[in-house]
Length: 325
Image 1: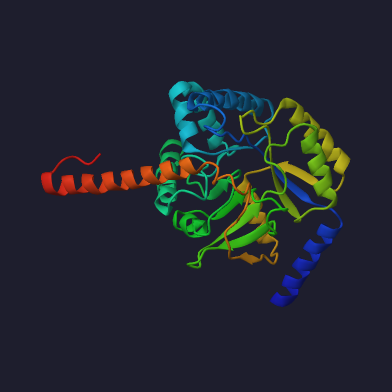
Image 2: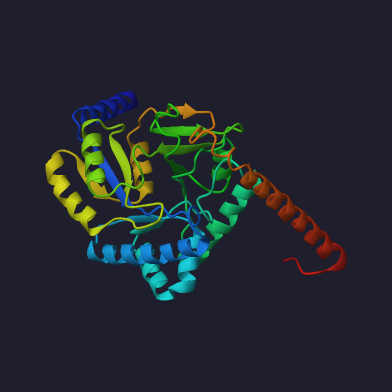
């Protein structure tokens, strides 16, 4: 059988499943946490502790559940305040059920900081995950950033990432494919996925979203991250019970928990025609940076100060043999 015939057969078979509504859902719990937003940092600190304890208990009750969690700073906080709970998380990581994503120190704003800031995010964040959890994170994850500058594919690929998950800008703000190859000006590409619904779905909203997507799926396989977010929380016992019932209700649709990396691999296996996007991913919440211009100024001042301190420290080491901090 010729290769072209096999390729056509695979595409036709895949399309047939698609139009019949036999969509495959890959689910993973998440609990988006802003370390600081409408609260001081120590509230974010304790939100991490509360959320992780809840989720670990839930995962021990439901052995099939998979959960994604980003931001090395949050793991560091957990290691400091709850070392025994941190060990439980490490065990779940070893089992392949707790999935570190993002790999950066935090999920940052992806518009204002300079390029060096994102490079350090990857350098120090990925180093932590490798040392503490034995994981090389390859799924970039900025689910709630208000936009994404055009140089990120280059930084992500050269930092060892293969995939990128985001949600904003929404459909009404920018027309984008659900899955696409995002290309930076230097030609670097990364496979990007725009999450089709809110990352903070729980309860009835989660069930309604899955029912809606099953009848009109953007792809033959759809990744859904669910669980209460922004101020933590994550999936609930009610969510898990409702999902069990939903499997029967949706009939042909498949619902299973898995690592988001498996979703991207499934997409690649299907040999879909994946478009290329050569653009920054903008704009969400137009004007929000202008009304907080002080933040922009302080960030830039901090960047200049840090880079000046590095140069002076290097000179002090080379000239006076002082230790480099």
